[in-house]
Image (cartoon, rainbow, N blue to C red; front, side, top):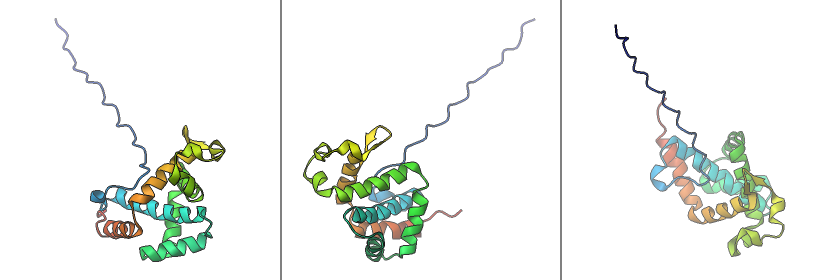
Length: 160
């Protein structure tokens, strides 16, 4: 008697975890919840850039909150939420470096920053290199675009 054959299919592998993007979403994806998080990151990043330029933190928060038609409390809550992730915490630290080293990073490559290695690295990438990327992104998005993205994200939140 022949034994019945059993068709065993291999289990599919789980999808790899995608890294957190270091730039806010394109304007077409503002309404998604993930886009809302990215606009919040961009808002707090603007505060950190001002802190890097020498502003006191509360003054920087007030300036950005006024420009975004938000409150300082909202910005502080977003920052507390964002720094719970190691990746985003490093992103915000690099934003301060971007503000501090703005002239160096606008005028040339990050290796022109004196002692750039002393600013540390995260996940095999120099923090000053991340700061240079932030400076480039900073040029792409104005505060009015960030305000619009936050407003649109709040209106189109998915129901849960």
